[in-house]
Amino acid sequence: MKRPFMLVQARDTACDIANGTEGLETTFISTSIFYRAINTRNQRMQGPFMMPPRIRVPTKQLLSNPATRTTGYICWQCRHASLATATTPAPPIEQTVSAAQPIARYPRTQPPSHKSPEFRKSQLHRQYQSLLRSSPLIVIFQHNNLKATEWMGIRRELTNALKKVDDELAKAGNEAYVGSGMKMQVVQTGIFAAALRVVEFWNPNFESPTPPVHPIDPQVASSESIAETKGEKDDSMFMHGLSEQAWTVAKKNKKLKHGLEPVLSGPLAVLTFPSVSPQHLKAALSILSPGPDFPAPRRRVNPGYHEPAVQAGLNKLMLLAARVDGKVFDMEGARWVGGIEGGIGGLRGQLVAMLQGIGAGITNTLEAASRSLYVTVERRRSMLEEEEKGKEGGSQ
Image (tube, rainbow, N blue to C red; front, top):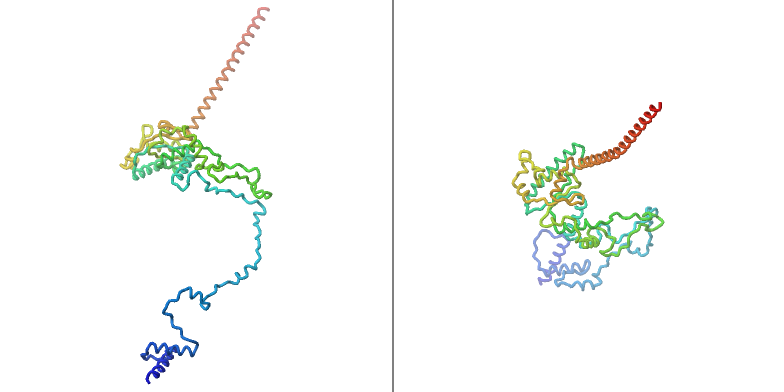
């Protein structure tokens, strides 16, 4: 008889708890009785009370159930997109005045090459070509296992010596500062030799020919003349240093001599200058290869030059040759270029003086012939006048 009363009491307590009207009193209720009371309350108010499922329902069954299926959101513009009318935008004003530029088959900055440009050897080959073309004065040395500290000391002393030459020339009015563009670096001999063959025997015309028609003529859609490329590496359109043609020409002329074959062996280092300057070459040789004509700085003047690391590195350097304006000079020739008094200006002065001397000699030679002829004629005329005077005196 107590069970129905307990059920009614639990139902009332559950309703009070759900409604928030129950006080802070502690009530002990059975779980099954509490859920039955909650279910009865929900049936009275809005429907059956759904307990969370204890068995996991597969996702496919939830998607197949129409009650749980959700429809995707479709915006208002997407619904009416099919009804919109396609409109063509007006061309820009530049296109109505000038023609569009023609489309090339390959970009100018990345033309196809004989070997893949991603390789380090290809990039070194291209770098050495640029170095040989842009450096009219190159001095070649042989190095024998120099350490990093030795290279650092040698470059420091070389930079200081060339800076002094720049300061002296700047005071005289020459502000070219050739020494700031000096660079000494170690090269890979095989790649450097291959790049030298390309530079010596491959001379392409990098300047594009002027088109016969103006490239922005509005009468023609594309009036600039572009060579028809085949899309292959051996196309004649590509004339850069890594192209197929450059490699073919260098390979065909492999037996030709450029003058540096005897020295292109073993570990090499090159000293490059942006222009030919005998003063800077003299200062560099006095540091790297001192001799009677190019004495090394004294200890009092430059104590850093006599440090053990610098001297040890200089003992491992040996002057081999030089390349001046495309001409090869041996060690004596390189020292002769560095020994020109006054630099390029002094050499030009010597040339002018020599030409003036030659001109003065030629002038004197030509004047001597005419002068002797004039003297001879004058003598003959005076002799004839004397003879005539003698005849006139005898007749009287």
